[in-house]
Amino acid sequence: MLKLRVYQEEGVWCVETLDGSVVGCGKTLKEAFTDFGENFEVAIEEYVSEEIENLHISGFALRCMIMDWLR
Image 1 (spheres, rainbow, N blue to C red):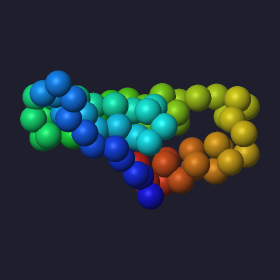
Image 2 (image 1 turned 90 degrees about the horizontal axis):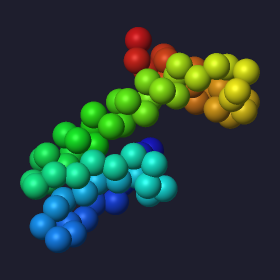
Image 3 (image 1 turned 180 degrees about the vertical axis):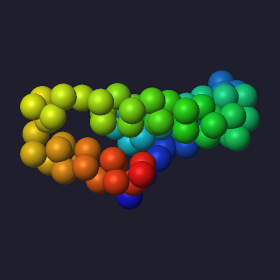
Image 4 (image 1 turned 90 degrees about the vertical axis):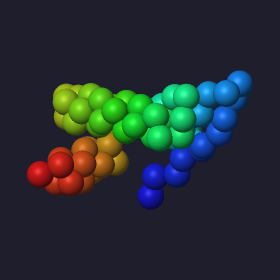
């Protein structure tokens, strides 16, 4: 399950993962979620392109699940 933090700061909406690894912001909540989605997609693409040898066994399992999900 993906848990997100959604907040407004100085008139800007932000959506981020709890660990802050992926963030999206915008003038509206819709823009913030759209930006988050684009950034999340890039993060997934980078993760699945990582060399398998560099991944812990749990990371390898996650990579396999992501690859299956993308098919």
